[in-house]
Amino acid sequence: MLNTHLAIQPVILISNLEKTYNLKTNPVYALRNVSFTIPAGQLLFVMGSSGSGKTTLLNLIGGIDSPTKGEIDVCGENISEYSDKKLTKYRKARLSFVFQFYSLIPTLTAVENVELTMELMRVDRRKIRKEAISYLKMVNLEDRANNFPSQLSGGERQRVAIARALAKNPEILLIDEPTGQLDQETGESVVSLIRDIAKRYQKTVILVTHDPELKKYADRIIELRSGTIISDILIENSLDGA
Ligand SMILES: Nc1ncnc2c1ncn2[C@@H]1O[C@H](COP(=O)(O)OP(=O)(O)O)[C@@H](O)[C@H]1O
Ligand SMILES: [Mg+2]
Image 1 (cartoon, helix red, strand yellow):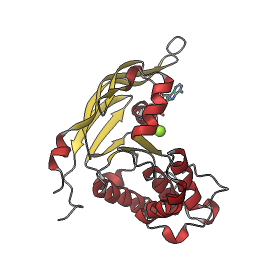
Image 2 (cartoon, protein in one colour; image 1 turned 180 degrees about the horizontal axis):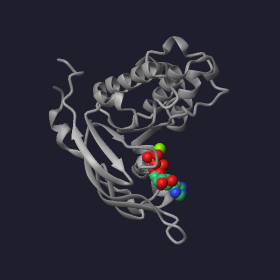
Image 3 (cartoon, protein in one colour; image 1 turned 60 degrees about the horizontal axis):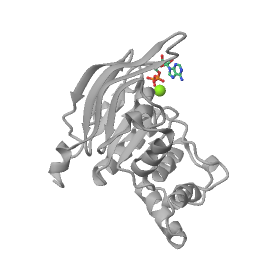
């Protein structure tokens, strides 16, 4: 095994996290009293029915939104009280998002969608095309590099979105309902690919899903109900083999 010591070092510490919307008028408790830690390299699935707080949790960890109470510490940075400016810097440095609706730019080809992220990261212009193709290779899509999103299937679009996320070379990947638009078989192949990539490149992944069929791809499953954790289990994984 590679770097087994990494497996016990927490990258994310969450304590007494609370998020309340409409605090003054009609409070909605999206998250309440949520505490847990995530070790480096873990593939964590967050499950729970619609409205249970999954996206809120992901957005708080991702610095898209700020908690009402509690602490979030990511890679030694306490982001809970960060200003918008510091959060922007944090997101850029540490993580990538993958969303249900892919959010690819329709007028750019697959490889150009990946390149766009790399330009924002100021990768050397001359190296960009080659590197972007290498990210498409990671998701087995190099042969579709010059297709536009409209020419790709849902599963292929999601793989482009994953390649784009990887192009930032983030420590952490935050993935919200990646199979929401896909049929069961395609969805499983996308999540299986996410698992392979996470293990090969030692990424910490938080993936939100409500599909119980996907449980077997997780290292750990946290289940939310009405904004609180109702179970937190480690999965004995038979998928890794040798
Ligand atoms: N911006 C918002 N304003 C008010 N309530 C919100 C907002 N975002 C989410 N909520 C509420 O917070 C709860 C959790 O939402 P969410 O995290 O999106 O759940 P999930 O992703 O599990 O479906 C829901 O009751 C939802 O209606
Ligand atoms: Mg959601």
